[in-house]
Image 1 (cartoon, rainbow, N blue to C red):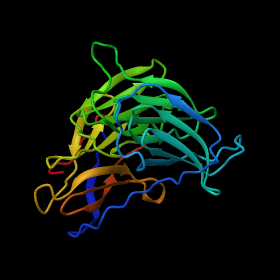
Image 2: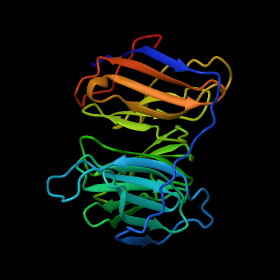
Image 3: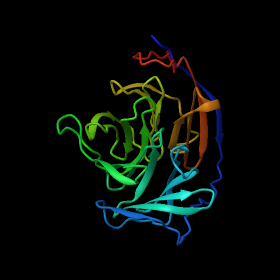
Length: 286
């Protein structure tokens, strides 16, 4: 049985909150295509604010490389980084898009926002290919509040996870066009859902003081452990972002948030093997 030990490598915090800055995409006349997607809630706010960005992997078959997707109000803006030219815009009328996620192969990207719907798009045509808003009606449902985080399964391209204000992480299977499983408990308010490759470990970061940083088993939806998240004062730092490290940072967990004592923390995971075996046993006291 695998054992995972958790130790904190680094922590960075500040008691001085600097004015927050927001980014906007300049209005350009070089828009090539625009597509409107029906649905959503009326009265979207903050239309000029960029709430999420993701890069599309460079594809040999594509004539255009260095492509960035940005969520801005009810729009998904496709931007060529080198020229800063807008090449396409998808509009989700009435929705306020909070999060975007590009699948690892670059073939599909997904969005989530204020209308509680997860949408999947074909990247080659920029057309809507899946609308994910329901379950089987018995054991699974769709989201009932804002969606703030999306994560593609690194080992199964047909599986997508979404985190929401409704205190659930939903597992969607694109083959059946619905949610097939849920993890109850995480209160997701930012980019704070991730999956560890080869292990089915799910990381969640909740916007709350009590046990905000957690690891789950995807297969059983069972909570495996609460990662230590010490705060110098109540609500000193509430988590908005959490990710498994990749590349040179593989084997780590990185999380951060805001509050009166904003901070970023890095943890090391020891004993995480590239295996689908489980459940996992954690040392006492972790």
